[in-house]
Length: 296
Ligand SMILES: O=C(O)CCC(=O)C(=O)O
Ligand SMILES: [Fe+2]
Image (cartoon, rainbow, N blue to C red):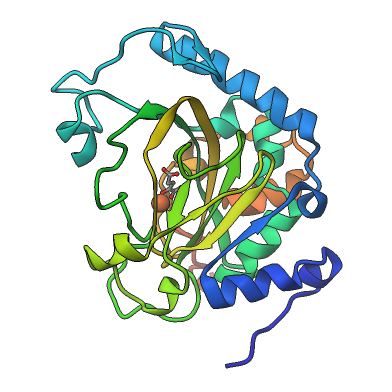
């Protein structure tokens, strides 16, 4: 089947990344291509460490992780199955990042990231789903022997078609190495059109090793998870997750995002479009024209 290459993809020199997305379901885009400066990554690291301290109440440093002894309380809301098995947390998520700082909004409208999302999901159909940071430190168990492999569009009924129903970017704010708990994925798995079958999936998973500042871009059907972090220190990332406009958003961005913040970013028009502020659905009142009496 032919692959359509958009003008944006050509202008930004992303053709090889599009090819990798088609073949492998994942590509790594370096700073020389996406254009985000390294000091922006340094600043985002500081923001996320400070936010972690504020949320949890102990210091976090890149070489040590949390300075306190952490646990999940048994009745905590939003505990995953892995968290339940492994009471000792090795990571947590900072959600709703685009509200916290302009730099996170700028990242969400990065032209290269958005062009690749639109390639997979559709030019007019692409919207934000969520903006989260994965804050991760040393923990031998991680997601366990399955590596937590999943497809992000896993809730959608099958059969899945060629277009991505969701697609994701993971911005690496620290170096990604296998022993440091890198991203894991199965090349080409997005073309299978179904969820991971274990234990075959984990045995075929490969690490995505890349330098701080890289962005990992992947299709919603790609089987992925992460290796446990076996060494001291932290792995920090930002998952800016996108969706087709017919798929429900993880964060209620359209309903609750402060409109004035959308104006404070590199591309307010693009931010508002991806946030779906002017989408026809869901409507909250009569939205279709009603006939009027002609001779009233
Ligand atoms: O690095 C990880 O823990 C996996 C991230 C992930 O599953 C995602 O961003 O969808
Ligand atoms: Fe995921």
